[in-house]
Length: 213
DNA sequence: TGCCAGGCCCTCTTTAGGGCCTT
Image (cartoon, rainbow, N blue to C red):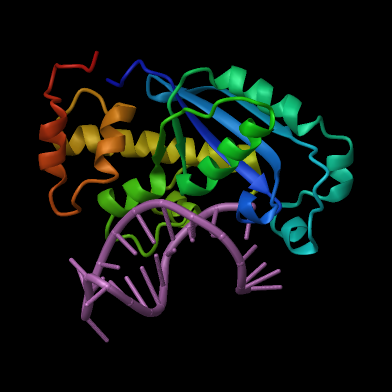
């Protein structure tokens, strides 16, 4: 399968709430590396921040306060996952959410959060406008993506998002006769005019047989 | 089952409002 050799990291956070600004903290993170059209590696860990997990979140994610008591410290986990990802560009489903926790948790350990995020939810709105909705579970069913475990656990959701990303790359390459669909093109497409994606592809400068340096 | 926030998108819009999506 002709795909870009670049490595993209797909991440997913489980958290105690919806926004760091309201005191929410990460409880689990997973990162899945995608390269050459397939998943090649992954990192996943619970993380102990001292934040309390509400009954609602425990039911949603299956992550309990007791589970976090024996988890490694959040700072250690963030250093490890940052090293695992390196300088790879990032992808997440509804990336605004994961980006907010990525930046907040890294800032707590004095790390710069400079990574570029592409968003499979925004891309789905462009590529699959007829989908009933753009939730991760709906898109996984629509594309018959392989099951990856319990939904709302970080590694399972990151794996599904990675499979969705690979599906999107294949669809973009097929639809526009491209040899690859690199992260930079996805970043352009996710903000392109819905009714003129082809023009966005053309502006990006990709042609069959060409590659981005 | 859903509230919290915030970025994005659409439209009965743009001097705005409401829905989507994430936990």
